[in-house]
Amino acid sequence: MQQGMDDDLYNSVDRYYEVDEFSAREKLAIEFGERFAIDHTTIDDEFWTRASEHFSEKELLELTVTAGFCTGIGRALQVLDVAVDFDVLWSREPAQH
Image 1: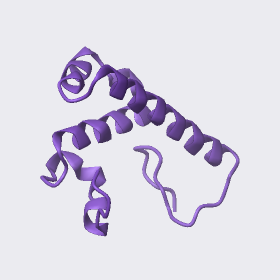
Image 2: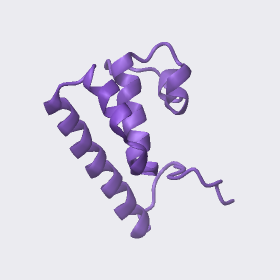
Image 3: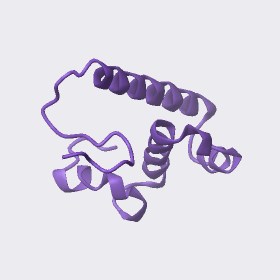
């Protein structure tokens, strides 16, 4: 991601697959993070084949470790009921209001 990403692009991450401003690498990284956090069992051989066309083995390892760390911290903060300054929907379940 280039520094200086504007709010419109930031707010379009949930639609990454249809936003031309994201590069192929960025789309794959976003897809990986989403799958890792929501349903890691969908990260299959087909995904690894596509990802290895754009990332080195080292980069895939770093992406996996980063996704694991961020997902773990996010879940820990949720379990501990740490207040946040904005609403985040952590799953595909509908928001409870």
